[in-house]
Length: 126
Image (cartoon, rainbow, N blue to C red; front, top):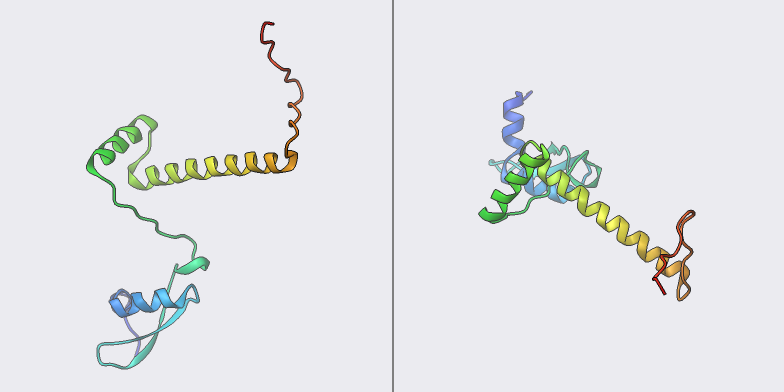
């Protein structure tokens, strides 16, 4: 017997289906039990590391939320999703810069790394 889209959506959003989705860890299929106690297999879309995207959430205070809305207006960001994406992008860029600095430190060890081409030491006036 075929199920309508609304029946499938309702069945797949039930607590047992969500629990099965977590345990499926990206396999795309999961086993769960319906209300009558019989097992069934459900399709789990977008879960785990193989999904196209992930949802990350954080609860923030009202003051920070107000500040972020004002920041978003200044930066031309539309809504919370754009704010979070921009913030995560900045976090990632900062971490990448830190990794690069650490790799330079590891490579050169105790010696002084060379200056980039075209850069000279500043004259301290002495």
